[in-house]
Length: 507
Ligand code: UN1
Figure (cartoon, protein in one colour):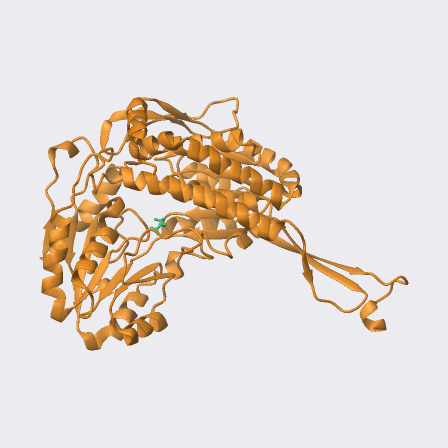
């Protein structure tokens, strides 16, 4: 039970605390300092971010490179213990993390609790993976007189570049995976959310992870470019927009030196298909949750709802009922359902999209924003009727739900349309017809298919998460193959016959 009375008191105490984020390496000339303010009230300062300079980036990679062989040689079991100690430290700082999730990222109390939970789950899960895969060599079959074994090791220095929408969980998750595999890590959090990342890094160091093995590089896109253009980086784990993933891919390809690994988790144009056999109350709850929780700022969030035409009017009436009941406002209030979007740029992009659809004459419903939102980056939750997912050009990362209608006999065409946009992250299906489920399972090109439930909130280990196509490279975060992308494989083959020579030929 994370939300208790003492927690609320502690959150109130932390309300005015000022935080700092700076690179773990301190160069001679200091980088620029930027203020960090709250998305729900931009007049309130949370702290400052000092950007990494080019020489700090280079120095961080030098130090990471120097420690990596030693970190790898520690072995899976010792690395697991350190990651678990970090998980314990995170749990012991619940109030600080929840406070920062709210103040720096504008997350609701519920989302903040879930965020910390997911971060801790990632640390513990990848600790388990370090034990499972990196503790001892894997014996391979071989002819008599030969011993063959496979060992997994870190690739070298891994860079993680993470998003503001999961400023803790997706900041620490990929870094923990890279560390588990025996890499040293340079971690660049989103420019909007460096403070929570700095706290996470500090606690990891206090838990015993060597500072050189996990370093923080704060800053905006230029710092990311400095990192990804350095030929000493063995791989990049990136979560964010498809366009940025493509730019990183080009930057890695343009470098001299070893071929780098890219693990990318990007956007989606996620749909949900609801047929006439679906249970209306359940659909209402799951649609409202999938589209508007976290102010729609999840890459898993529902963007395009397909309603079968016989039930579309009634379903839409009920969904609008749920939509009207959403409480919009201060993320620190327990009753708030929808908080702000991350910044003015995000708000402007969403407002442009909505205005354009209005100009096209499409039906648009919007909520009124309450007065408490006046100083923040709030976008009124919106529902827009469209005719097809193909009418949308890009992902709209916020509280905007598009609704389209389809005829039952057109199910396969709807799935084709969804596939045709090129993303492949989440898909929801509400249907009580087994044949329909089989058809969707067979035809839909998506990473995560959710049937008769909401389509956000993938749980580490139970629901490994990630997409295909424009949505990312895979393998799925929190799944059994993820850590392997951060590892290199080495095979040792030993002739064990006393005389030496080729055992397989003698046998
Ligand atoms: C993201 O928004 O980048 O399933 C990922 C979910 C989260 C993952 C979202 N666990 O909603």
